[in-house]
Picture 1 (cartoon, rainbow, N blue to C red):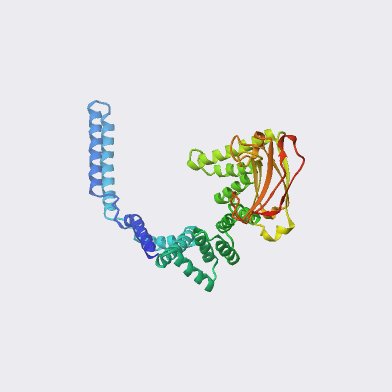
Picture 2: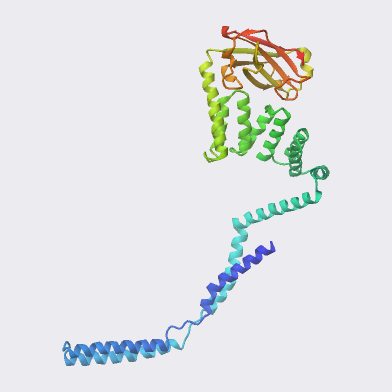
Amino acid sequence: MLMFWVGIAVMVVVALTFVVLPLLWPRKIAGPDAVSLSIALHKDRLLHLNQQRQREELAPEAYNQMHLELEKSLLDEIPEVKTHATHPKRSTGLAIALLIILPVVAVCFYLYGDSFRKYADYRMAYEKTRKLNAEIAELGSVDNIITQLKQRVDAHPDGRGWFLLGRLYMKQERFSEAVAAFVKAEQLTQATPEMLIAHAEALYFINGHTLNLQARALLTSALKLQPNAKEAVSLLAIDAYQRGNFAQAASYWQQLLSQYPPDSDEGKILLRMIAEAQQHLEKSSNNTAKIVLPVSVQLAESLKNKVRGDETLFIYAQAETGSPMPLAVVKRLAHDLPLQITLNEGMGMLPGVSLADVDKVRVIARISKSGQPLAANGDLEGSSDVIEVHKHPEKIVVMIDKVH
């Protein structure tokens, strides 16, 4: 801060030098050079007058009259020049006033103007960041930083400190602890878009790369505060795509695209994602009347105590024989049960693999404890009877009643 004010003082001194010195320097209005100039002009006029007489352009009386007037004008000009030459002008009073007034006005304008407030805010943020970085460097390893920071925020609760702790937990993939830290941060300080998005990201990873209702609400709140928050829009786009809401996914990606040049790497990726979502929409609209499987998924009473509600729920159609690759799939959360969904040709995981390619399928529903699509011990499952897809079944019931 001291160096800043020193810099301001130097600039003021330089500016005053250009303003004040000309006022203190004696200004010669005229002097000997002016006298010489007057005589030279007189000689030039006299020469011109004599030439006119020689060419007989002037009568003798007119010549004598004009010659006399030239002599008199020279006598009038020379005393006036000398008088001005002996009185050089200085603006000492004005210079002193400017020396006092200008620095005072400049400092007052800066102190009470917006620039000073912006600079003060910047300096405060810079100092906080510098001190934090210095403290982190002293603490050493991430584990040590987390331990020290946890002790500090426990002793002196601080919203920003809890948020920083949550981000450190995220780096170590300790997502449950990160969520707890973000909740503390939001209780102690006004939630910012950055906090809300980080909280939603932690929930996303806990739930097996799926947004639950709480995470969606957090992201929606973040967008109200910052409508173009890239991380929030991106997560909501992925969520919409996973749920088969391709129109909404394309809309979110279109919103993101407006923030990147179309020829950038990010812009090219977004254009591909938008095109893919639109292909799904076209395929779904073209095939809606062809292959449609209305599915009702329910959870057996005996297994309800084994479900928290935030587990990932996969519902998919699988060919009776041949490849186990899902022909149509929908992803939800366990707390959505019971639910009604529709599987169709546009929900295939790979191009060229859809319900239209087979005659018979089973519809399977699985609550995944790990959030991964592959079955694992402890997952809860249920399957329908064999369905003939081209006979347009009215309703397919899947009861989740087994533990894998």
